[in-house]
Amino acid sequence: MAGKWQEMYCENGEGELKSMILVFINGPDETLASTKSTDQPAYNIIAPNLSSCHESLTDANRRVYCCPPYYPDEPIVDFQFPDPTTTPLRIRRPAHKLTPEFIQNYSNAIKAMQSLPLSDPRNFLRQAALHCIFCTGSYDQILNSPTDHRPPGIIKIHRSWLFMPWHRMLFYFHERIVGDLIGDPTFGLPYWNWDTPEGMRDVAHLPPATANDNYDYDESHSGEELVQSNLALLYHQMVSGARKAELFHGCSYKAGQDGACDGAGTIELAPHNPLHTWVGSNLQPEREDLGAFYTAGKDPLFYAHHSNVDRMWELWQRSRAYQPEITDPDWLDSYFFFYDEKLQLTRIKIRDVLKITNLRYTYEEADLPWLNAKPKPSIPPKIAKNALKMRERNELRNGSAGRLRFATHLSMHFGSEGRILHEMVRIKVKRPRVCRTEKEKEEEEEVLVVYGINVMKDKYAKFDVFVNAVNETGLGPQAREFAGTFVNGRMGAKRPMVNEIVKKTVLKVGITELLEDLEADCDEFIWVSLVPRCHMGDYISFQGVRIEFMR
Ligand code: C2O
Image (cartoon, rainbow, N blue to C red; front, top):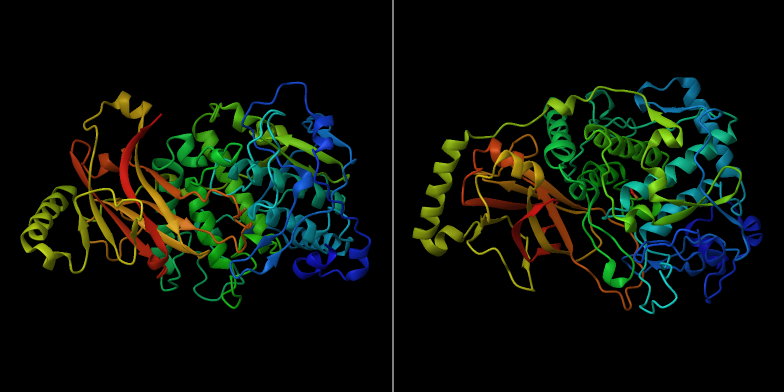
């Protein structure tokens, strides 16, 4: 086992590795049984079986092993909120406003973490490995009941409603560890403020230096145009495209192989995924470190990037006045384990991390320019609608000639084989309901669903979705026709898929407000265009497009 660690994570020398005790048992997890809380867990909660950690494979079938040592008798405590009367509030500040003194302290803390032995969970690589474990599906799930004999599923914390809470937990404990190592109980992680023009940068990135929140391998975007596109994207991902919890958080990932789902929320798709890739080194095969999830934790920027992702969750919660977002106990009671700064292994549930002030941290306020960055239609809607009608007539009249460049489909389903996105696909989609009242629109969001998405390789792959676009060339988030984006962040590693039902991904984008702005609210049909990006269309297929209504 130590050998595997060395391949992947060992940069601290063999001596320390030898001191690691790796125990693997295959029987039932005693530790969990003894710490089971008195409230009965719901049937389908997610929690890792700590005794089950196993290796993963990269896309090129290289072995990746990120598992920590496991001690079956190690005591585990349930998480308690820090006492607000004695715990100072940590304030997370924008990275571009940090003082040299703060940066010095923070880098001292990272050095201190790097010099701890690998046997210490506060060691920097051990912290980084936490992300590797959970992005590659290295743990099996616990069984929800002794009578449940279904094979346990694995746990992945991306592309579902686990994404926001699991990452919040990781960075919360990481922050406590950093603060403790530099003796500063007020230490707050910096946040990479990529949602304001001043923060849209990464000084290590060679020109163009403006961060591209919707990165598609095209480095030619820059300057003010890129800033505006970033702000419009955020408006979409935080406001008009995130009017329901499922759109923001992603699909409901539950226990068992049949409970798994694959469908990310808005912020995870972008800017989260594109910025990982934008920062990741193009000199590395899988754009390690930040560009592949299994190594992302080794880049200190990872922590600041996710601080801002987490801040987006807090801002989104605030925008809805902290109304309960998801009330399903399968989400609320799902739990994970983390070491705190005193090396205490702690069990923490999703319901524990819903309010950051209970965790005694907060974000320094910053401008939210994207709140007012609602994009305008690229063509006045009336003109666009005439053009779309003409286009349809021409296509029909010209038959195949009109299809030479674009596959235009009046049908919405492509069967189980799906359709490869090697070029843009335009689809005319029938809307089940039109001209809904304000109240109906408030209650149910109209959602465009691209289903059966299959990304054939572990590649950074992306396509954008537009509604009623007359000419997609050059269109991006700064046009109101932009309805959303699908971004496949690369894990860089996969769990051997034996016995796993490989599920296809779904993309859901909220379009109620967009249809109003495009004056298409009462139209029976809309045109949907899927535009492949990053020259990756050959690797992406999808089965179809439909409209559904989401409560
Ligand atoms: Cu778990 Cu930024 O990824």
